[in-house]
Image (tube, rainbow, N blue to C red):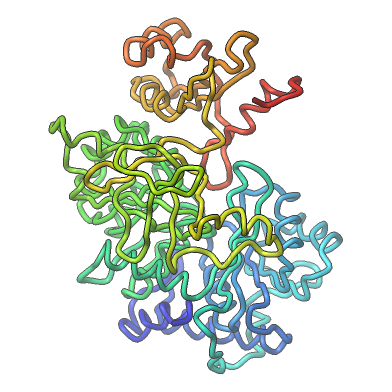
Length: 516
């Protein structure tokens, strides 16, 4: 199936039901479908061909969402552009992946001038919410095109999307994803999280990341998409209650903000079926708090742009282990491999490891990308021994639950010992005054690297470095306890909410000739 076929499945299931709303406007599946056909015809009229790249640069927005569907309707490859990226990053992403058409929101009008100057591949620009200079308003542009776009036949192995990688460890790469990759993602999602009735999906995290990914299997089920501009804690809590939201994806940092909100216990969350968290490991203590507040609805997925979102899954039922000392460890797991994806732990020589042995998490199957666009060497490096290498260090327990120990590049080597920051972060996150934290290695003449914690406190809370060191030492012992702690008003984060350890680390390593 083509990626657009999952929207059409929802259309045939619930043609007059709500498809998109921002709280002020509403579009049924039929009304949304007409717009996607018009957009598709407009792109075809401007000589856009299958697998040419079309992008949308916009905050979460109904019209921008229809443009994503229209790009796919024309058989083009959709490239998500995160609205929170820097202008330089977006110029690089658009240019290096040879974007041919750009739909954009007027909030980026100033950026568009620079993008036009520095990008020679883009053949057309359309503004989704107003005319901008010589670029037409989407509604005006669409008025010239028919309601029925010709069917574009596509092979399952043709390009459906070029997904910019997160860039948390370096320059973003273009991840080539096929229609078969998305079909496998939809299959994993649907088998893991089935719904008897049409779901209601709150799109609060960027629609250019996992929230957009989640939309496709839910659209196939006839889901309404409740679109809000950003993951504002109070607005999300209100929306869950008002719209009877069943499904929501957020990164852990956004969940921490909800948990810290003074009104978090004042709303009705009984409609929730799956509150999905992913993109980074979550504090086990804060996960317990979330289960207490939102109910037995927490669901975890693990994946990457290179292997879309659902390599593993931990169901709400599998979270119900609090109080059982033998099973409570699972709250630090990311679940078991999904039914259509293989996940193993591998050593540096390509050997698959047994239970409780630490190594790199590797995956294979139809979920795994076609490769990196125009980067054959990087593709080959990521595909050693016939498996996709995630760059994450992990282990499996005897029951097949996967645990992420750390990013391979984040491991600290201090005095010859391997120290995994995530273990220390779990302890710090458990402190009642901590909002978020990052543990890194910093230069040390004696040990090579010393453990350092950088902490963001909850608003209105105070704690001293010595108090935090005592708290850590009681639970970690001397070797793993941070040697030093700094308190920052806010940790740097990527556009999708991941804490950027490389930016934190850079502050402490800039004067060093070697970074190890």
